[in-house]
Length: 205
Image (cartoon, rainbow, N blue to C red; front, side, top):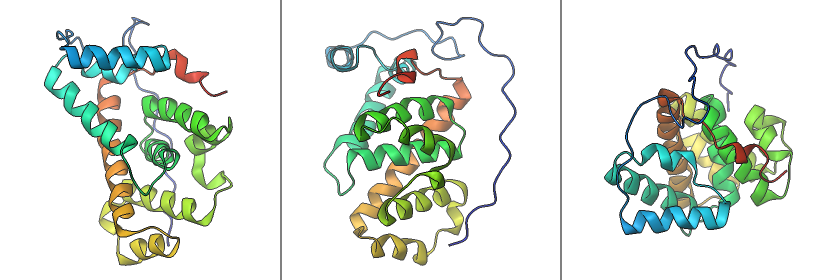
């Protein structure tokens, strides 16, 4: 499988926010949360000690917030042939390809927490090929890297390589779905200059 040509890192964005407490660069008022979302935010506080800024960012529109939560929880937490760690590794690898600050930091923390390996999240954020990965995981991350940067180039041989390392066709769907979700999330985060919660930087270290 041919690896994509390396790209230069993009220049730093201009016009950074002056307000260090800002979640995003857009001025969007927070909508009134219904009981379901109030309970969801409360669960975040209980489990994490904070509400992820991505949820705060979507809270200007209750319908969009609920749709985001439903899709995210289904892809990342629902039963799947992929482990939760594998799904988080996909998130970090896709976000690395897209240079997404928010998702690299937030999901790199999740990789550290789930794997118990303080180095793994950082390695994936920089270059997944530098990590010590088994054949199954390497094939999965090769696939999502190519899918992110050259989606038009995915062919049957790419799916065949996943099958050879033990993935079922349903797993391939889930790999693609998680990768696609983060391709979208990365672009929203970058467009709005979404800032990671400070807690993510030390979580799992």
